[in-house]
Amino acid sequence: MKLYPIETGNFKLDGGGMFGVVPKTIWQKTNPADANNLIKVAARSLLIEDGDRLILIDTGMGNKQSDRFFGYYYRWGDFTLDGSLAKLGFHRDDITDVFMTHLHFDHCGGSIQWNKDQTGYEPAFKNAIFWSNENHWKWATKPNVREKASFLKENLLPMQESGQLQFISCGGDSFIKQSELGFGIHFVNGHTEKQMLPHILYKGKTVVFVADLIPTVGHIPLPYVMGYDTRPLITLTEKELFLDKVLKNEYFLFFEHDAHNEICTLQATEKGARFNEAFTFNELFD
Image (cartoon, rainbow, N blue to C red; front, top):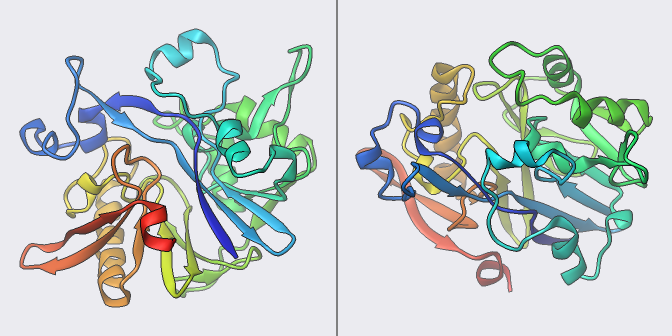
């Protein structure tokens, strides 16, 4: 097995939205804002090369939305999904599986693209299976008012219409459930219904793709919960349980949205779990 971080394209989000009730005087120490109160955000995917399988975890926003849409998100930098794959000698047609932690547009938008004459949409990974779970799929395709703007039908329905959509089983009570893709999954419900966090054993270390449970290093302390979470009190409980597991098992956290840190470890303090040490992927595994 080999793992590769894949940068799909950076953007910006409102710092207040990203940190909820936490005051700016505190969160700007780890996530400095610009004059418009926007902080830099990454859209970092993870590619797993495992035998005949090439699995991509999340796909970023994609590029099919309107200029007006992207105008809200202030894209910056030169990263693209195709460019990042090409640097590693891969093409999107090589991908066998696309695993989506959840179906908010910044995590799955790159899964679907315009067709050639821009009259409709088609899968951007023609040879891949798209993996979600049934509970989350129902939640996303019949969205609540709070999340409706994040669940875009053009990102979702073409997956099902193509026949390439399959569901991960989310039954059982264990903290980490083994999946059909060969890695473990931890389900969390505070940010959105049945978000999936992959746990991947790699070179003797467990790497956890933390997605939107802990978007950045600045979100490690328990009360630092995004304003975007639909059930913030559930997020608090889930984070406490998760961080306890991280400390006990010495997991490595892989950040999807931290523009400054790819991977970190945690340490136990009197105030709870806190940031310990950051690594680039290459520093840790080369």
